[in-house]
Image (spheres, rainbow, N blue to C red):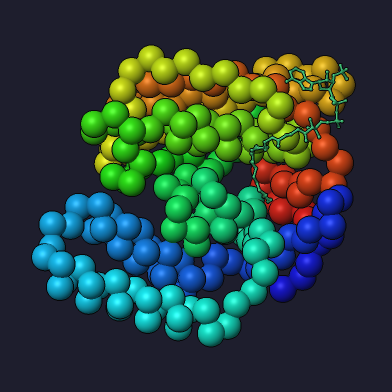
Length: 216
Ligand SMILES: CCCCCCCCCCCCCC(=O)SCCNC(=O)CCNC(=O)[C@H](O)C(C)(C)COP(=O)(O)OP(=O)(O)OC[C@H]1O[C@@H](n2cnc3c(N)ncnc32)[C@H](O)[C@@H]1OP(=O)(O)O
């Protein structure tokens, strides 16, 4: 594992691949979150479950590391504990299969029950977060790593839970450090939300290339 210093002093840790064991734990935690939301168990079972979860937490805390982003060298650099795409972050939906082809960035996401806003629909803030992330990826892959200073989301239709969704994003224009980009999320081919963003290229953020990662 190597470490790349960032402009604000934080570090990015490079790992060869998504760590299988950590991803397994994250997947099981996603199951726990889902079960927690749906459970109708009696109090004794809830108490027993809470104790088991506490035991698992203590086991995981036996050896801890800092919270720096970990990024793989494979597949264009998966940010493994990122809030949106991180396969090892149980809070991430996650956004998967990120790809960059002919200037277009795409990815897939399925929102779990935990992402519910209106009944049966994804929370609009989480839809916006996924779009923001795809926009960030598109800008990083097309121009350079950047930060969002403005994002506008139009919600056109319900974004369902538990259904495979496609996210696409691209750069529209560049004006100095300002990058204008747009993105959509689709269910069954129909757009449910579109986003327009202004992102500012910021020196020192991790750079990611479409085909080969060059982070150090
Ligand atoms: C493989 C590695 C993977 C790693 C992870 C992958 C994840 C990738 C995806 C992650 C994606 C996640 C994405 C996220 O979640 S990013 C997180 C959310 N965003 C932020 O936290 C950003 C907060 N803002 C800032 O820190 C500063 O504003 C920055 C540093 C960005 C710029 O401050 P700086 O002092 O440097 O620059 P400046 O103030 O001179 O401004 C520069 C220019 O910008 C124009 N401007 C500013 N604001 C606006 C505005 N609202 N509308 C229109 N224009 C605006 C401004 O007029 C000026 O234009 P001009 O006068 O030059 O013409």
